[in-house]
Length: 315
Image 1: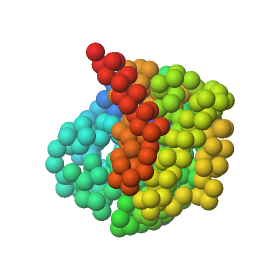
Image 2: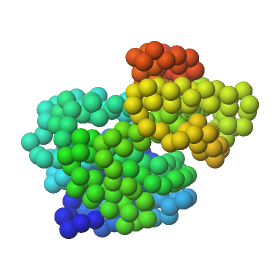
Image 3: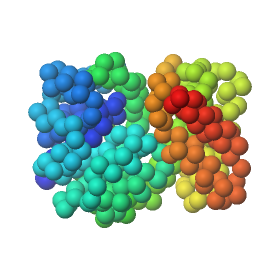
Image 4: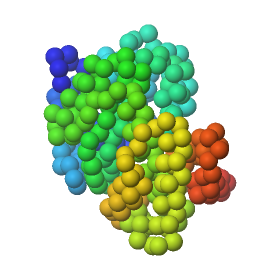
């Protein structure tokens, strides 16, 4: 991890945030956690956070916050934002003005373009992205069933000014067998897009059909939609200069074909009548498709269906 001892704050204790909190704690880091759900925080105070499934670990935390500003004003110097991307604007509004502290702001979220929201209160040179290739679902508010880890993860400064911080993050995760590569800003952009394209294939589709990922990849009619959504995403990405793997469409369909009998987080959110990240996934592909004059009919349909259901849920 290097000689410098960073103090890590985790904002947002969904499955990804709790997995990261436990793993950084296991790596020997001083970790503070923050969320707005009091039931979750109370359980973490008494029982800590537990991981089950693909990763079996647990950790306790002394510093637990319910306010983002309290976390930022503590002695942490790396803050990992693992809230859903659709909550970023609210978080930034709560922060209000840029902190005087020289914080490393790490965005560990799905979706395209979320780092731009944070430049309202932080300098771009402070921002890093962490593309995680693991996920899970909540068994209880303080227990995550880790459903998969497909290494590696990727860490980078978005403008290459914080290489040492990205290296430290990668080193900490590597030390606990979570393979993580430190890359440059160009590569992290490619990896952000790659993951968004993979998510665009199943997340919204499972949300509107209520099929699990395995079911959607098994049923021929939905499989055709998955393939077309991914194809559209790849065409838009390449038009924007993103470098994807050779034979990316085949890679993506094989990757998604290994999905299990569970729901992606966007589907869970929609079924729970919560706001979704659709505007950072399928909708971004639609927006960039219009910019490059590329048709994105399936992504447009999925975006609009999710938005229509969200509207109905809000009534």
